[in-house]
Amino acid sequence: MFRIAAHSFGAPDQALSLETADRPLVDRGQVLVRMRASPINPSDLIPVTGAYRHRTALPFIPGFEGVGVVADVGEGINPVLIGRRVLPLGTAGCWQSWKTLPADWCVTVPEDLDDDEAATAYINPLTALLMVRKLAPKRGDRIGVTAAGSAIGRMLIRMLAARARILSGLFAPPRRASPFRPSVPKSLRKDAPFQHWTVVSTRWGVRPALSLVQPSSRAACSSTTACCQASHSPTAAKPA
Image (cartoon, rainbow, N blue to C red; front, side, top):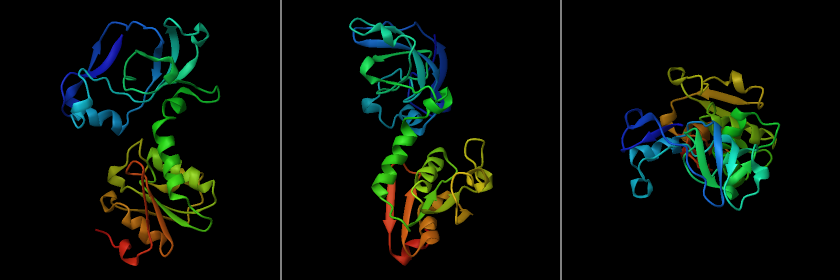
């Protein structure tokens, strides 16, 4: 099988390499999943740098989320799972052809989700949901979403728009645009009725969002995982 692994810590573009490996054996209570798709998240790359080396064993295979099909089951597991499309959660290791894990950590994928949607259905959506719950917006709140063109930013926009809130979106400047991070609001107009949008340097962080939504300000900082901030101070709107 193929896998992407790091045998030493360092910059991901230098430490990671594509290699071949033997297909893993399935132990009791485990399933073998043939991977079909896995995205790239910051949480996949940070351990490669050695930031968590005290709890990261080498060789390290990134990939905390993805989608695959159960190909085999170990002793004690119902073979009815074979052929089922699942999210193999709980550990890294999705950046390989085959992944073994406890059967309890497999989440069945609904038929109406394609592989691309399913492969990204764990980290960002749950993070966005927890952010919205922590923010607890009330009707009439003016909400600023930083990094609004990012994957999690677009999810936040949909969740907040579903609650009929007044949204302001902050987008990265054009020089930082990429196919994966739209920097203009056009692609999001169908998702939410923006009252305001602007293009700012993301190094300003959450403060430009507060300047957009004053005087009753709440900001969902989608550029930082699970970061929700609220401020009612006019001075908080000044950029750093």
